[in-house]
Image (cartoon, rainbow, N blue to C red; front, side):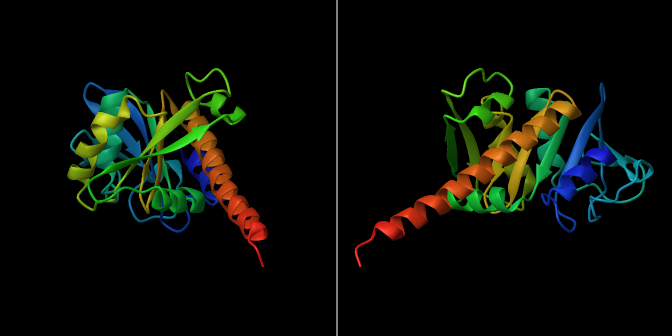
Length: 207
């Protein structure tokens, strides 16, 4: 997992101490392998990773578990994911605000007719659309996780938290990383499309 985190950090998707990442080590009982909170995710050696219980408590290793561990656990428990990757990219943060819901609400970012959609599990053609749930941000992670749970089964292997970023997941770490890269591509494309549309509209305005 350290290698995957370093690669994600190099893409500029988890600058500073941003982002958090988890892999399932066992399900009975549920145990997650994670990076400790508050560290640079681009330079976490394997021996510095921590293991976390189904209640969010650190079982082994030094450091604190991220406050967002509860959302990781909700995703793993609801979708049977084997890994969850959370990023703070510019595109994800900007679009989550642009499409963000009212407090306690849920909005949806619609992505359609793009070849890269086929990188998401279950998508066979570009001629389709997916709806990424966008939840209002909340520092109460129990409340945020409870709002997210009903949306996860139908989500396209990813959700957005408004003004915060993307959570993507998969059956294992390679699939979760693929879904993360696909979602980040689609978010970047959507953001650039908005910029292009705004530029074209300005050019068409009468002078």
